[in-house]
Structures are given as C-alpha cells and as structure tokens.
Image 1 (tube, rainbow over the protein chains, first blue to last red):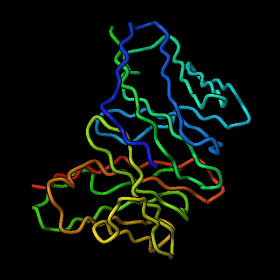
Image 2 (cartoon, one colour; image 1 turned 45 degrees about the vertical axis):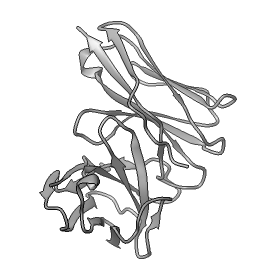
Image 3 (tube, rainbow over the protein chains, first blue to last red; image 1 turned 90 degrees about the vertical axis):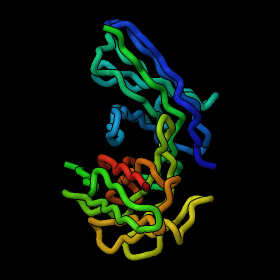
Image 4 (cartoon, one colour; image 1 turned 180 degrees about the vertical axis):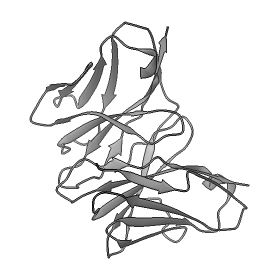
Length: 113
Length: 116
C-alpha cells in the first residue's frame, strides 16, 4: 500500500553541523529514489536522486546513501544552514512506472542559529 | 525548464459545492500527471495517475466519483473535488512526467483547499 504518514519525526541541529536524515522504503522492486525538500505551504523541491545500481551519490553539500539490502536511504547535509530548515521526504519510484512516486514519512529538520 | 503550475494556489469553498484545481506543464508535454493529497504534518499520499486521453487510475481507497480527474491535453490535468466536505480540506499537489520512461516527476506548488 501507499506510505501513510504519521506525525513527522523531527531533527534539530546546530548551524554548521552535519545533518543525517534517514528513510526506509517499502518496495524492493523500486529502482529510483529521490530526496525532496518541502517548505511550509509549497510543493516538494528536488534535492538529489540515486538509481538502484549505485550506493552513493554526492551533490553540492548533500550526499545520498542507498542500502538495498535493508531498503534504507539516507540524506546527509554538510554544514547545515538555517535555510535548510524544512521537511525532507524520500520518495521511491516503482520499476517501470515513470513519474509515479511513493513518499516516505518525512522528517522535519530544524536548524538552530 | 520543467515547470509545473497549479491554479489556484488556495481556495475556500462552501460545503456541498465542487471545486476544480488545474495542473499545467508549462514547458514540456506530460503524458502522465499525478495527484497527491497532503494533510498537515503528514506525507504526500498518491491519489491517482492521470493519463492523457484515457481514464485516470485511482489508488486504493480514493473515491473516483468524488475526485474527478480529466487529462484532456498533454499540458493540462484537472482535479475536481465534488460535493466537498470539511474533511476534504487538504493540500493538493500535482506532478507531471514527460514520459513513462522518465522516472523523475516535476511538482506544482500545491493548492490549499479549505471547505467551510
């Protein structure tokens, strides 16, 4: 079934620290994963993606790690800034279903100045 | 590129009325669009897949007669919430994909629906 969200877990970090946000996905057949950032009242904003044939991908200040064995994704944000405060969602794309995304629970990141 | 626009950004309607939300891909053709619903402090839940020129595919538990989806062109999908009730108040978000082979989807800014 679809991911049904409970109330969001929260992560509070100090400005300048590194943040690690974790996500468990549900479908072992999923072959594409995306991390999104969502600010209040806005749609999801693409951060970084990774395909199932990779276990790590780096972007600017962000790194995504994929562990297919335990169906786990993580997003690492280096030198977290106040502007990074938002809700972060992982999403999985079931194989051969272009554009269809199943979202994880989400984590609310709060950055203290 | 890859801009998806939703209209309106917010809407307030009376209980029992219907409201239509538009989702447009501005700079690409979208063979497939998706509609999500998000309640406060919760994740996005996929409601339905909108296919250009054919019927939408609804997720389990979503009433197709209540949430009417039309995808009449390659750049426009509409979601009509019929006979809206306060429990339909939510944040509705659409996304669009250029093709079935394109895994990534591009999101609109969302529509806040409040039913009073």
